[in-house]
Image 1 (cartoon, rainbow, N blue to C red):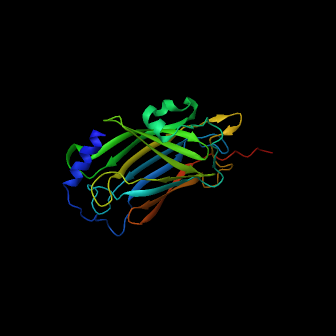
Image 2 (cartoon, helix red, strand yellow):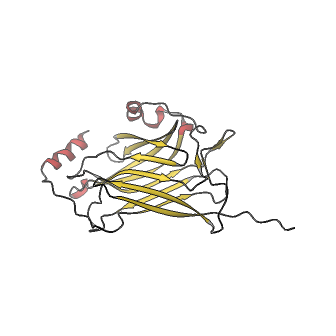
Image 3 (tube, rainbow, N blue to C red):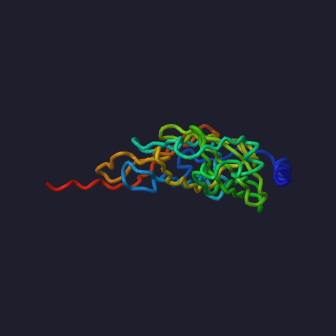
Length: 238
C-alpha cells in the first residue's frame, strides 16, 4: 500500500497530457501457440505479448482494456477437468495461491506494467499464478518488489478467454499500461478429459490459426493471428 500511495503522490505532481499514438500501425506483437502439435490431444498454451506505442517505441504504450484469446476452430477448454479454486478475491489477496487446492493451478508467468512515471518507478513486474474455476480463469498477480497482490477474473468460453484489464495507477490520462505478458497454461488431463484440447484435425497447410483480439482505452481494436504448427496423420498404405 505504501508503494501505491507513493505512485499516486507522484501522479498528483504531474500534469495530464493527451497520449500521442500513430493513426496507423500495430500496437502489439503477440503470439498464442499450442504446446502440442498432434490433433485431438491435451495441450498447453503459450501467450506472449509486447505492447508498443507505434508513434514512439520508447514511450509508454497505449493502455489495453480488453484482451480476448481465441483458439483455432475445433479446439476447446474444459474448466471441469482441473480442480476448482472457490476462494474469494479477499482470500486470494491475503493468502495467495495457498487459498486454493494445488491442483487448481493451471499455469503462470509474468506481466510488466509501464506506469509512465520517471525513474525506477516506471516499470512494475508481477508474477502471475493462473487458477481454475468454473468457466473462469483467475489471475493472481504478486508484485515482485512489494509482495502486494491483485486478482482479476476472466470468462472462459468453449475456445475463448475474455479478459478485462482494469484501470491501474499511472500517468494520465489512461493510467498504467500493460507492457509485456509472458504466460503459460499447462497441459492438464484426467480421466474426465483435457483442460485444453487441440483441434481434431490438422489442415493441409500444416498449422492451426489462433487469434488474440485487443481493445484499447481510446476504442481502437486490433487482432493478431498466430500459426501454431501441427502434424497431419500419415495415410496408411494399402
